[in-house]
Image (cartoon, rainbow, N blue to C red):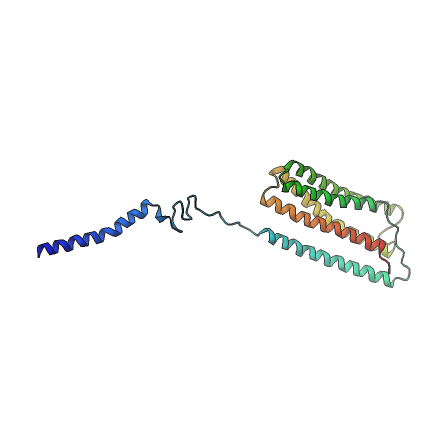
Amino acid sequence: MGSLLSSQFEAMSVTIAHPELDTKSKASNGGGGGPSGHGWDGGGNGWGKPDPPHLGPSPQTYQLAMWLALASVVMLFVALSSAYVVRMGIAERWQPISVPPLLIPNTVLLLASSVTLELARRRLKIGKASSFGMWIYFTTLLGMGFLAGQLLLWQRLRAVGVYLNSSSHSSFFYLMTGTHGLHLVGGVIALLYVCYLNWKKGCSGLAGRNVLNLTAIYWHFMDGLWIYLTLLLFSWRI
């Protein structure tokens, strides 16, 4: 009887000791290395820990927001264009102004700025940070040169007696080119910000590339819009 009780007592001791041994074993292995542990292979603080997720909106979200903003700009100029065509059709005497002498040089400046902007993007893509800076600065200067040329163009028109209220055509010319100029100021500000990022810490990171790509979309759109406006104002006839 005594030997039987002794055997049962030893078995109970072994059974109670198993969880303790298992706990010590897990503690010595760093929590088991499982998905919720802290081992080297379990997604904890070791080498196997996954990279933190990207915080904030994705680049595609920013691009979608840009296209929505450009859609509103398109609607604005569609309304202006419709009013222009209707006014041309009902006018008894439509007197268009002659093509301003500075219009073609200004257009060349804007087209050149789109070319230099794409050269800057390609330089950044292949890792040429120094030449990227040169081209993006040059693009910004061309954009500011276009705006300065527009101011000079309007000044020349006023000097020869072409004002906002001189005729229906001159009114639409000032209105459309002025509205385009205001939108282009936003593009120049964006280019200046890209220049600042490049000077401060470079644009090779994700944030810098996103800003550059969005600026390029906006700038090329304004370039194409200018070509459309010049053709509408000086080539469209009913």
